[in-house]
Amino acid sequence: MGEFQAVEYAVQHFGFTPQSFTDGVFNVMVDNLHDTMNAAEQYLMSRYRDVPKEEVKAGTQQIILKFLQAFQKAFDKLESYLLSNLFQVPDNVLLPEDKVQMEQYTPEEEAQLDDELDVLRKKIRNAVYVNTCLKQELEDLGKVQQQMERLLMQVAEIERTCSDAHVHELKEAIVFRSSKVTALIDVVMSVMAHGGDTEHTQDQLTDLEKKMSRFS
Image (cartoon, rainbow, N blue to C red; front, side):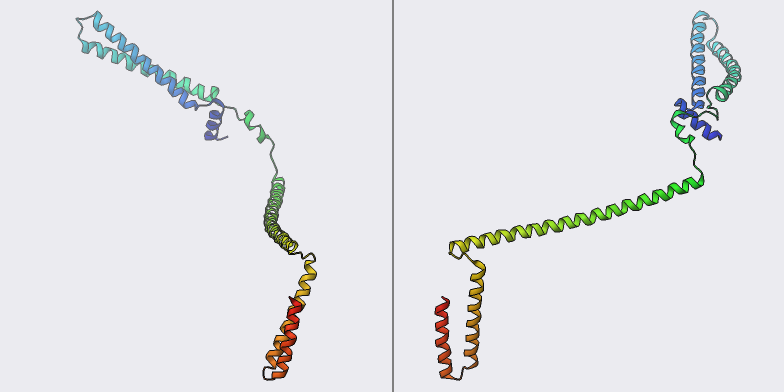
């Protein structure tokens, strides 16, 4: 495990970087030293008023520098020990959240998994395509159903109209009337074709009047 990976693993386990912890301890110790020496400086100035304040401050500064030099050497050893022994996850230790990585796959197994994933992706795409087609077909069937419902309503309306007109056999009545209309069309066409023959035309008109009277 590289140094950077070791630090990341330590952060994952402890919740903070080891270096930030030791730096924090060092800063707290230095702050406490300065607070202590400031308090001592104020006491000396009030206790020995005949001693110039500049000499008192110079003395406390020398004490701080000597203490910091000694403290820095001692703390460097402590920091090295903490970072090497206490805040380091050994290479042979696996954190609980990383237990899933214990099972490793060979290149052949990974290739097989990739093939299975490709098959599943194709099945999903096919299922999406089929669902889209079925959805479109359902929409088309819905439109056809609406048209059929409108047609049935029209047929029902026609049947009510025929019933009111006492026409009970709608199909036979339509065929009958259609044949009469066809015959009348033939007569009209014949009259138009013999427009110059007065006698023939009169006979055709007479026949047309008879047929129209039967039609009505």
